[in-house]
Image (tube, rainbow, N blue to C red):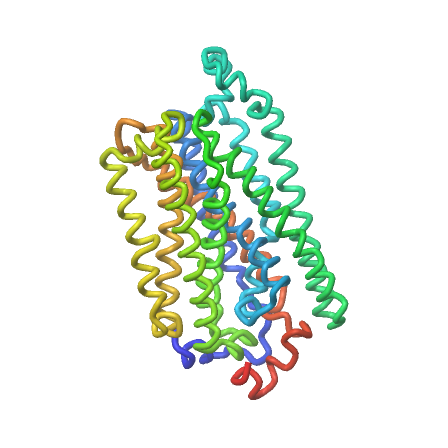
Length: 404
């Protein structure tokens, strides 16, 4: 998407809150049909349904959570990259109540997902008994409720003050957004780390990694940014967004995407290097049953297309300034994030083979349909740009964007 494409086809004059009702209805119907089919499939294999549901949920909820983290980062440091995607990030963060509701089905499948939720497994394993103070069903549910309470509270405050800023343009609101975002990012990092341990790492409770939370957090931010770039492409011909989009804005987003790609690779490789060099049986087992074929080939595929290829492409200025190519790359990274989660979670349930069930494909589609319906419902409720943000005053005035 070049500047001519991004700024062309403005649509109706002054159109700031596009009607995405048809997208909302379409994704809602798709989500309901897909999950309905999977619920029928669950009658024959409850365990397979919950295995697929966990992976799909972590992907879509991770985008919502990542949107909140990027939104706080934008309010804290500013920058044109955040200006063009702020409304997308706010809409994604406001879907967290839906993510909380979609978490509830997992509570009915804990016994199919986690050994520590199986009384007979705990009774036969001394280590699980030792960890039972933390890894138990009631405390697990309380922690999840706390995470969502903090995330939803932060998202609502940021969204509320942003809406007030749209009405008043008061500079004091910018300061409030910054004051919340500073400590908010600290608590965000802590809660995401604990959530990663609870929801993903404890699938294999005998294994532990002190850097796993970092891998998960960066993966969520990368997925959220890739999703935001895709939405920018969808909205590129809508005013007022079309008036500020240019190769320079895509270049900013591409640079940030490159940073997260490198950060993800750094955390993932650091975890492997530390555990492999330590060569401790309780740590290295997690990697060993992911090093057998075909999981090993799956891992090399992720290395190639989650890091090497995006890294090399994003080093090129042409890739970052050519919007259409950047959109394709962002879509590819989203797909790689889904496959990364599949590689992180699924081998636990298939240690001695590789098995892709039809629900592994359809459950994420169902969850995604419901989440995207909620996202477009939120997106259509606000103008596409925070026009009254004093940090970007005059951005929509003729000739201003060219100098931004």
